[in-house]
Length: 315
Image 1 (cartoon, rainbow, N blue to C red):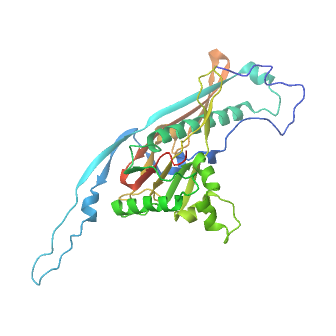
Image 2: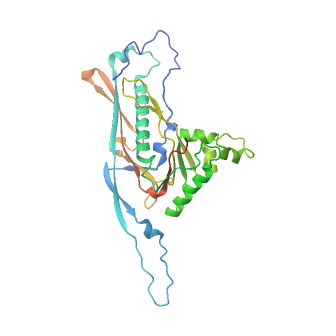
Image 3: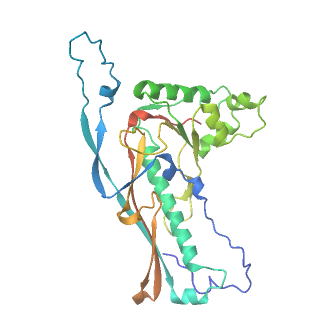
């Protein structure tokens, strides 16, 4: 694996307040924000699920004088989660540290590098688990596509919201889209026509949220290198030309429905949510300090009916 050499960390002249590192902002990643986080004490366990059909049935009846009220009940079952443990480390050799110029903080740089790696892993995993067809209550592709002149993204999202409402009793409050889709909406005539006489705002996540009638719009703007180490880099945006319309509560709780939850095992992440724990320890035989990141999580879809997935919405 590539490591900086003693000459890599020492240069003849250096700007003390500047370095060049391709660090993506955490806000570009949505995995930790898409679903509420639930800290769990066990790596694998079960949780209760209630029968939706029982809660939505109209069962209250008139009661005649002197008679019992109508009886009812609901069924209870269980589902399970399993938090996989993810980890990565970077070693900082004594010679490398001794030759580093003062602006370089080797521990901090390693921490930021490893954090970036964990953000990418979480985003790729969330997209594979939740931002795909075949896992939500409804899959659809709009027609016309959203980069067509006659497209109607606002109406398409409204169809998705109505479908989820009919099937669950909850109006979706979240729209998650890839950056490719967001780029198409910036110039979409259906969007522009709604604001051209009333607002001078550019198209932003907040503006789209108002137009779609949801609390928030999240845009996946993370990018990663899909090539193996040593091969020519091949960069790709995480998330295809897709959109997820779903309902998620602000906070998790008993009998609180949600499209999904981020199950985070505190046994390794020390209660840091969907973040990760950073460790630093000595590897004496390598004459190096090791910086290690570790997290355990399961991005769990708990109610598929609370999600409506629009795939390939642009050409």
